[in-house]
Amino acid sequence: MSTGFYQVPTPTNEPIYSYAPGTSEREALQATLTALQSTQVEVPLYIGGEQITTDTKKTMSSPHNHQHVLGHYYEGDASHVKQAINAALGAKYAWENMAWEQRASIFLKAAELIAGKYRYQMNAATMLAQSKTAHQSEIDAVCELVDFLRFNVKYMTEIYEQQPPISPKGVWNRVEQRPLEGFIFAITPFNFTAIAGNLPTAPAMMGNTVVWKPAETQIYSANLLMQIFREAGVPDGVINLINVDGPVAGEVVFNHPDFAGLHFTGSTKVFKQLWQTIGDNINTYRSYPRIVGETGGKDFIVAHPSADAKAVATAIVRGGFEFQGQKCSAASRVYIPNNLWDEIKGYVIEDIQQIKMGDVADFQNFMSAVISEVAFDRIASYIDKAKDDPMVDIIAGGEYDKSKGYYIQPTVLVAQEPKYTAMCEEIFGPVVTIYVYQAERFEETLELVDQTSPYALTGAIFSQDRYAIQQATQKLRHAAGNFYINDKPTGAVVGQQPFGGARGSGTNDKAGAALNLLRWVSPRTIKETFNPPTDFRYPFMGE
Image 1 (tube, rainbow, N blue to C red):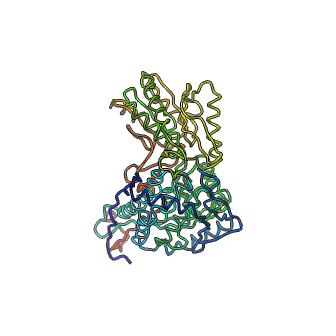
Image 2 (image 1 turned 90 degrees about the vertical axis):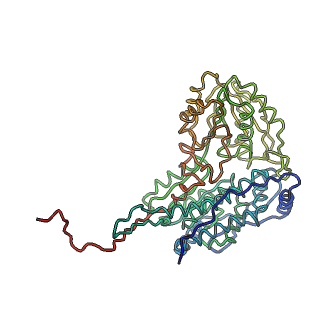
């Protein structure tokens, strides 16, 4: 029983380690990489208090060296999904009735474990299994995830503190934020370990219990996350990790009457399919499920004729090619005025020529491999089509090789047609497509940017003209949920830039903000009257 109004520690963004030559963290991370590479792990299903193995065991390998086996995971079936749901429902009563500060303490401890004891293991696991560089892993698997946990605890208290402003004489009005009735299904992607950690923990923090299905290519680091959550004190059954094929899991989850919510990050196509399934099954559920999703993007950079050419070029290279372009926020379509084109083109080609690509253990590499052979083949098909199209020029990259790892060169296409396929469709790889427009047609180009893609996740305007910045900000109001001025359209930071987009990019429920946590509670208004009336008659009824 709480006997105080507690204030949680004020969150601040976790400092980013540089891993520069000569630093102690560089030495520690390299040693951890070596250790993990020499050990194979076996990943079970985590259901209730059990770690379950099955008869089906699948291999986990490094994308940048697909012959290197990191370990194996045990794949479950429909029976394990049912078991996980039962475990979540069984844990629900005790968890939702645990005092909020006790729940807060668990996730604050998880943040400390990730930032300290497990920092290098978290980084090394993400680097080896998802082919992130040390920097990309540090800002994701450690810093962003720690920020999610710490800031979400603060947002949780702010939500609980929101109370009716008026309680007239003799009345006490109050609101409690109840967890949803039922269980939450969290589906997480391969590309951000932080998202894999946030999607199950955000609902759990608010008193919900969760069935969590990570992407197959992220199970290696998801396993470490689950171990950390357990060490931090997350009770059995509150978060249940299942390694089950998506359609198999969905068939059970979306036909269960206690399904209460979906927390999803992944492709737009899959999200729409899940939404339709939920809609078709709406009469099955005890309540209307909450649907929260962040999906694809076809993120833009627009350069005004007044833009700084070098800044634009750097934004293209960093925004388009960090983590091999496998970010939903990655810059993938660029609009450049003809007065700046030659200069920007020169800078971009010069930068790409200096990019080194290879094994993440070599810290000189800016890029590594894409996540899988399926992704490799899909991205390569776009490059092949561009090679065969006389209306497209490849000014950088264009080569690929999967003999050892799934390597694709950073590739820049220049399309003469502004609605060329690669300007419209999400490729999710290291391919940036540029359209050069006439400098005097800036306003028309803004209309083009707004209308070209079904997505609306991130975008950027580069300009030294404040009127042009204002114009772009207004014209592109609905084209991006995260809008950047003179900066690349990637790298949102928890507590600074709440992240999410609308249109085909999702429900825009802003991970890294209180808005997201509000989706996992159902408020109850309580009115208490201290002197209830004892006469049904009102004064106006007098004679």
